[in-house]
Length: 153
Image (tube, rainbow, N blue to C red):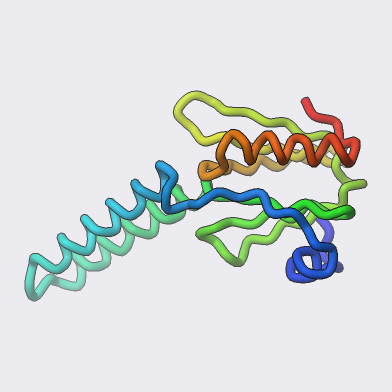
């Protein structure tokens, strides 16, 4: 992964194409909102809740947040870079030069969100689940990789 360029430079200066979906209208977004509402309602119904109960609820929420956020990646592709970001983890920015990418694979395992696997020229593999992307967005992303002659498996 390359670090000498910032994500904002890729998005603005290189005019990267964005490939993302609307998280709130995806299964994971709907499920997340339901869990947050249940936890909030549970916490409000019990007055004078002990600190230990709040810590347990906070722990459950953080575990849930971490597991769901692994399914919410989206992508920017410019003429020179692939930028991978996460909708629920704004600090995640994975940057690849297109020359670093040996090939990409797409998959949709049973009961999981579709993913993009990036295989770099040095043999490393990185998998990014993107549950909010629609079929037409995946098709456009595949077409963009073909346009840049990146091998698709």
